[in-house]
Image (cartoon, rainbow, N blue to C red; front, side, top):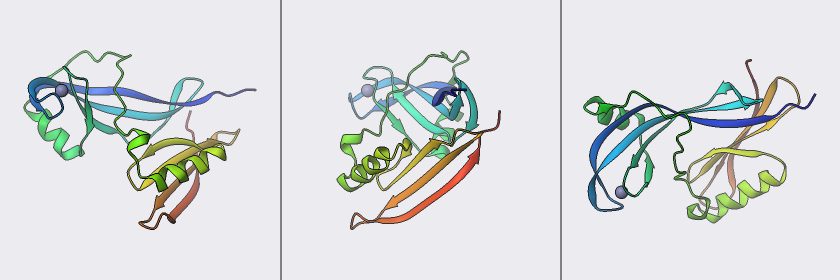
Length: 161
Ligand SMILES: [Zn+2]
């Protein structure tokens, strides 16, 4: 049977408040969202991954990921948004072109081996690959200052149904 693997980013726990936006240089309504990420099988989320804590400017649509603690602090005196738009799309902030070339090189290397990029920082990246069973392969890499891999960890995770 053909099993369709994928991953989803679902906005949750949203709030709104007026904040100063560095990008459009104005005080603007900003929306904070916790983005729950998970690996999906046949479109159904089965494996929760680390959440992203984001703030998005409602005027210029710029968005940022911020630390969880900072996000919660901002949320504490914000106006809660009760209805989360299920199809809301949050702009990606980690654009590939702004990443260090060495990291892009390693990401492309592993993508050529059919690894799918899940997440990355400026020095690290996480991938997954289906196994054909109820488990997924995961791969985590860290790139050092000299461009070499300083850490490479591979493991299997059960995709709980
Ligand atoms: Zn803005």
